[in-house]
Amino acid sequence: MDRHQAAALYADRIEHELRRLSAWASEPPPDSAFESQAAFFADTMAFFQWLQFVLLPRIREIAGERGSFPSQSQVGAYAVRELDGNWEASDLISLLCEFDDFIEGHGHPPEPLPATADTVPAVSEPAPPEPSETPLDVAERYWRTLDRSLLHKNPHSPSSYDTELAEKVFASATGFVEFAGDAEPVLEGLSIRTVIQADRGAWMVLTVLAMDKNEWRVDLPVSLARTTMMFLHQHQAWPPYTETDDARGRAMQFWQHVLNRDDRRVRELLAAESPEISRFGLGQVDEFVWYVAHSQEGDRAVVRVLMNTHGECRTWLTRMIRRGGAWFVDLAATLAG
Image: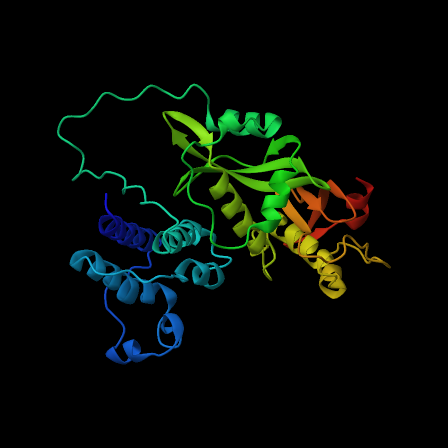
């Protein structure tokens, strides 16, 4: 596959992601929107519109005419900022970051789109043998042993954005703790929320696995990139799981306000008045509280979170009580352990 064929395939994959997100428009913006002088036409179009009606036609024009590519691309970097907090768009963000690397000569052609009913060959080939280990087994064994033979031999290119914090965590990893959920399909393969032992204690990371010669293997560059995006998302005003008012959402809102030292909002979530709000961490960007699991029985729930601050790394069982249809934190029971 030459460079122009690869570019056309990138365009197809970007279109596929836009359609998957139900972001594919049936009508273009008005002609005046295309007269913008702003980067990514940000003052006249939504980002998804710019991708569909500006970027994709330009990629396909260059590919079809075998024209010259620009020397730089910042589409992925812009997507990280523009789509930050949109978990459903994480595959699109990763794809656009790969596209940046490809344009700048550091990447490689994307994977072809999955076969559809129209593209499946008439004569099917024999099914490959099953992998000898499950993705979860490989991920756990990698973090327990750091055995480099479990790494993908042809991984994706390193991310074009800053992964320094994730690199420090990965480099200081000393062991596996637990998985915080099931494996989830992503563009590159499967992603697993994983708790590992590393600098300062326990950290939540994303372990991404892809097939390599019919075996699941850890794609380290993609794991670093997706972990970095997860760290960025966690520091938004409303990080993952805080957007709902169920027991889990209210517990995560509580911990977010605690780390932000927003005592007024913390008190609004307490089941009983507290003369003093406990302090955790130093308010640094590399301090996090992660959701792990929860259980509920009637009007009581327990939400397990992982706290990683400069002061301590530990699990908290957040005790929740429902009153008047709303969930509140039983602070005394939570601090008692």
